[in-house]
Image (spheres, helix red, strand yellow):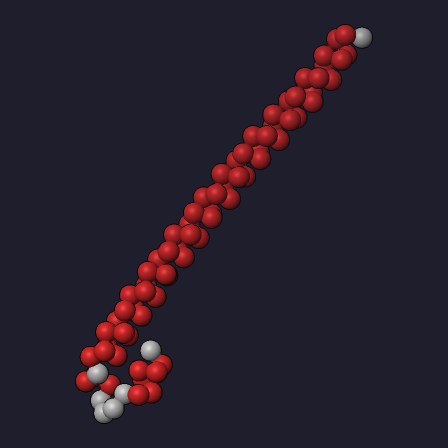
Length: 76
């Protein structure tokens, strides 16, 4: 693209190849931006799911340890 800009003769608006290249570049840039936004949203969803899973695990672990302590006391 930079080569096309440097080699352009006369008005840039008359260079059809340059205009097509610029439009393609703009479209690609927009696609990448949308993909990054989707990726960021997905990352937030994964982080939220991870927090829920860790919370559930922590509750289960606390219950399990407490249960085992009661069982040991009952057996004694």
